[in-house]
Amino acid sequence: MDVKSEKGLPTSEEHPYHRRGGRGGVTTMGLPRPIRLLAAATMVLFLFLVLQIMRSPTSVKLPGSTAHKYDDMIRDPNLDETHEPPEPLRRVEGNNYDADNPNSDRINATLLSLVRNKELQQLVMSMKDLERTWNHKFNYPWTFINDEPFTEEFKTVTRRHTKAQINYLEIPKEHWEVPSWINLDLMHASADILEEQQVQYAHLESYHQMCRWNSGMFYKHPGLQEYQYYWRVEPNVHFFCDVDYDVFRFMKDHNQTYGFTVNLYDSPESISSLWPETVKFLASNSHLLHPNNAMGWLTDKERRPEHNYKANGYSTCHFWSNFEIADMDFWRSPAYEAYFEHLDRAGGFFYERWGDAPVHSIALGLFEDRDRIHWFKDIGYQHIPFFNCPNSPKCKGCVKGRFTDGEAWLNKEDCRPNWFKYVGNEWDPEDSRYGTLAAMAAAANATSPA
Ligand SMILES: Nc1nc2c(ncn2[C@@H]2O[C@H](COP(=O)(O)OP(=O)(O)OP(=O)(O)O)[C@@H](O)[C@H]2O)c(=O)[nH]1
Ligand SMILES: [Mg+2]
Image (cartoon, rainbow, N blue to C red):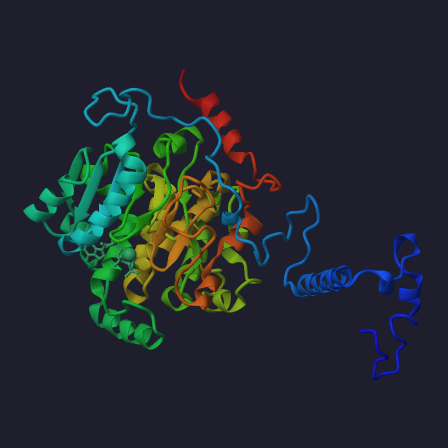
């Protein structure tokens, strides 16, 4: 712009800045045209960047400060390069994990799937992914459970997809049926109200039964008593990353109770009295609260105040339980048993639509040491419509850092920032929780029998 501007500002030649010129006293007008164009483009780019930083919704990170680092999580931590968690990690060496090795290094753990005969094809998809990425190396047994007998076709087809042992179990009627103290008229009337509030599956009785069973029954099955750890697998889920260590040994060696991949907000309408019932339970059982609990994560009302309000004090944040790698000793503990019993008697599995995800998550957040809850960041996972997709050369088939492939508003459902804020991110070297896993492994090592 070498001409006089309409506002009467001096031309570039007259303007004091230009007259002063750059290094060596060369004026801008003295530079060749391509250099001037380059300078102008650099200036525009600089202004654009300044504008972007000023428009950014989060506060600028201060070095070493993690306090509000994840408030809005403009950058998904799954974009950071992801490696394996810390040692000790058990790997395949020779035949130590062969399916037919009677003295293998496997521990008492199983892949576990509640599934219907009609979901065979979807289950096979899940099996193929998990066998390809992990279990063909470690050969942990599969356990399929159903409220009806499995068909021969189901058995024949599933056997084709693994070298590992398979258990086919049927759920005892008394574990599955609607309990005697539930008033069926009230249950149907409540389902009408839930449906008006757009709560999914409100009238689907089996869905309520499934949620109750997953909350407080599955680990009581006689066929599971020999197992301590399980990896829950649903039909129609996907696994994207090669995992080259024994995840069950990882849980044991690092003193971990529960592992998740996705952390979400729940529909508050489906659980309006879950937190009030929990508070009632705590009133007479406060001694069960773990000193290092995750109460802040459970009760946050800053991020989605309306959720906390509608759920009467609960943030609704939960571990998405269609993926769980966990220690059943926690569910089998007197503390959890008492809590489940209280909830079961209150009736919310049928008068509302309490899910096993918020029930498990609240129990873990209250009664377990929060440092014994692990984010399996390195396990690429999808259950429609959400993902956990890390940035690692071991992963194929998902987009790193993508949380959902559904509508954009679904991104709001991600509750990880809340988890990071109150509990921390064990994978982030700048985070106070970094190194926890190594410390837990040292503690487990110190207490394990020689
Ligand atoms: N055997 C049996 N399994 C069930 C029943 N209802 C649900 N399941 C299983 O329980 C798990 C959860 O059920 P889903 O229908 O996937 O529930 P969801 O994940 O909340 O819902 P989607 O988003 O539709 O997948 C799956 O492994 C199902 O196969 C049932 O009545 N009988
Ligand atoms: Mg499902």
